[in-house]
Length: 201
View (cartoon, rainbow, N blue to C red):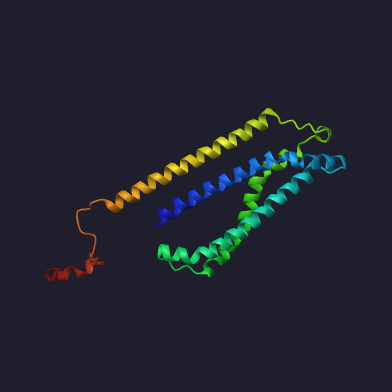
């Protein structure tokens, strides 16, 4: 059913969005560990654009590593998935040229999306204040981080509630009395071709 594919795709996007928000929060929370590095590099003449490029490159690299690990997990779980879902997917299906292009584009998009804010956040430190050990976070930046956390919790609650709703609906459909015995039912397709032989039935 294509609707299930759409539902699982939306769930996957929500989970990916939560992961991106987690990365943003962790990167900004650990900013104190790299503050002196940023301050020294700015004193030595490194431009802000170069710092942003470096932090974005690190984020994209981590996304590529995560993608490779994810592909490895998918390969390992392919056989159990086929057994559970009665499908016949092969490993070659995971490396179709369309999927390979997706594997290359996804880490770039996710890396930029999740690393853009931390990159601008870290590169905005003032070198003099940082080298003195004074890292001041503006109210707007702190408010933005708090909003990300709230948004993350909202998405998590939506996914949890949605999971319970889908589970209950599936359970209801499976146990509902449909008015006939679902076992040993013969399904005849193209009944229009059998109209001339209705008496046989």
